[in-house]
Length: 208
Image (tube, rainbow, N blue to C red):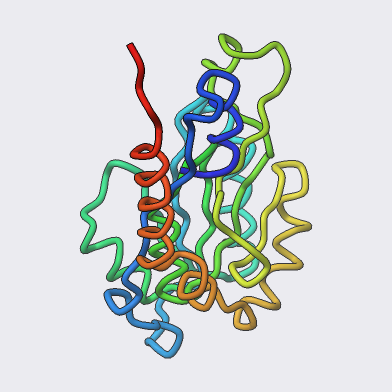
């Protein structure tokens, strides 16, 4: 469902592999830029590998920084919320800080972009899943935001988090994440990829 995932499986499946993503009906996600904002930041906590250590080096210092600088926030933890509550809260947030090891598509963060809420995304650039050691002796390229460009917000690495936030926050109202989704993640583009793969499969002759 994304480039890094495709490249990881390509050595095993070769020419049989196709890339595809789930598209968005942007009309289901009204532009929330003009909505009344209650929070400066939504912290989306999807940390589950080495949780204690990663929480202490990422979310904990980020929360201290927000408190010290008088920025308001709300916290959502993956697997512990209702979808309707998530969307309702997002509309009241100026930005999202997305703490996630990796995504192969990332519907939740793309729903955020669809609502025109920019994202500050933790992205170390390698697959942090302990299973990666079963596949490769070297780090596997990966991302937490596989569909993302400069309109969407800013990526950061853990050791540069607060410096990167200093670049992100002053520009928070200048990003145009909804435009990215409306252009790149449409149902039509998703369907075109699917049909291309379907036609390729139909054109393949299977021999005993």
